[in-house]
Image (cartoon, rainbow, N blue to C red):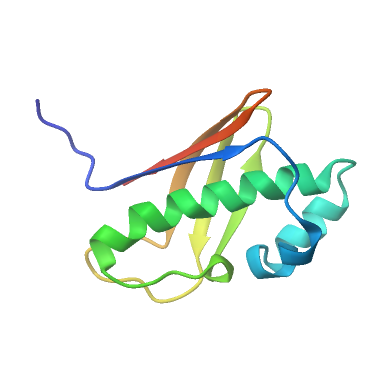
Length: 117
């Protein structure tokens, strides 16, 4: 079985709001602004947390370097259950892009995210 996928990151989190005391460690100012416009912003912050975990799991095996939560910013399309992540720091040549695409699904119990390159 052949695949064109170079790296895959998957994360699963419990479907509950993110703790407000860690919001600024996880979310960029742009993401916090978006979350503050939502009635259930801390719930969607948990999606951002999970998505950034998936981004890291995709990024690290290729670049062999740490990527902080605040070194990527997300745009989330809730209707299509997709997101686009822009890496805000210089990436390694092997990654070949500053943008990663991902998908998510939310159930009563869990938030699932996946990113691939």
